[in-house]
Image 1: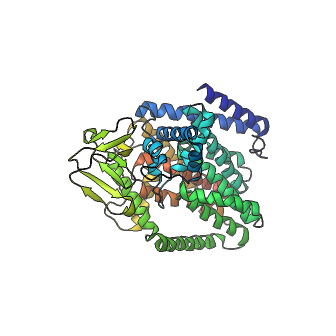
Image 2: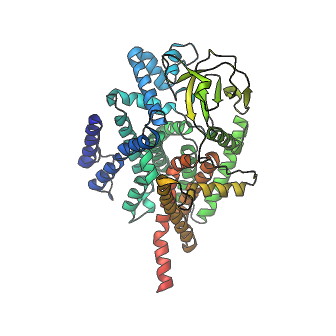
Image 3: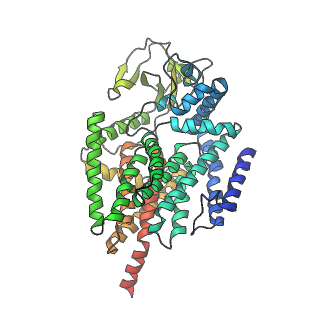
Length: 501
């Protein structure tokens, strides 16, 4: 914790002294504001740790603890074989069973092997582990230092989101910055060693570079910087990053080059882009985007049933939630074998769409890494519920991402807090709708922000049938609904003045 405080003080001092060497210089934000927001964001690090310590007994079994453990294992590799470590950093490692890397790293990690199966809606784990294996050199074996850097990544990313979009919020720049930086759920989860901080970093940089390319298309340097950002966006959180890249590329182009009917042109262009991406998906991946989303939804439904989820290089396994059915491997943390005679469900990586069943296990030698050990979820959501109507499913998804839980059905203190955040989103949504009705021109930015947030809400609500997970995954999208409300706020004030004067 002392090292964490030293790093936090140094970063805070640099922000206040010179805007972190000019990175955070902005005409509308003074150094005190930047420092104050940083201090509040840093408080999320102990808040996250204490929250999960109190409610779940700690972070060891959660993604934050697993990422820290895996980063430590990968960092240790640098002292054993630095050449292998460098290969791991650039993705050239040999992780086939029996290899040096497999025996020394894959076998002793939790989330690394789980990160090798990539799909449209799959979040790669290896980007996070690789980056934090580097941070571990200066972390002095402190989880809190890792969490601090992750928090700082989110701070940078949110600043660049603000910097990219602030031109649409004249005289409201401060409100924009504070609003997106301190949105409650995003604040909390960016304080842990999770994907949120790194995702926000890449998202902010991605939007900033896309806007620069649209405004200055002759800049070779900007193009070269965009290429790795797009590559990472496909791996890390494609449903947010890659979709966001396409969405805002169209938005910035139309905002600059189209003089009339901007909103209509944007809607048609976005629809055509989605059709093109869907067609490419069918050709290259032999499945539509909807089929990929349905697959993701089924995976989450399987998780919600609870169980012991195991993984090896060939298959993903679900055993009923009973530790008597598996045996822990000696000297290999979080690795198990399945006991003789046990029934289980599994999916082979070569054809993941097929659910297979082993009714009587005979293989007691294969070592599986533990992915999750989960009891049956208490807040399972099924937005399909027998319907094949896309409109009904989309409306149900929106309901569960915006209105669930709400005060009348909230269970416990944390769901009451979630209800407050949902109330904020409902008010923002109503403000945006009223603003669209009241505004006569320049509607595109507000409509675009709202559409981006709601479209992600529909996707998240459909593919994530668990209210707790929805709260976390929706957070980066939620700030765009707040942006839409802030954008239309002045128009609503003018409209109301005309009515009452």
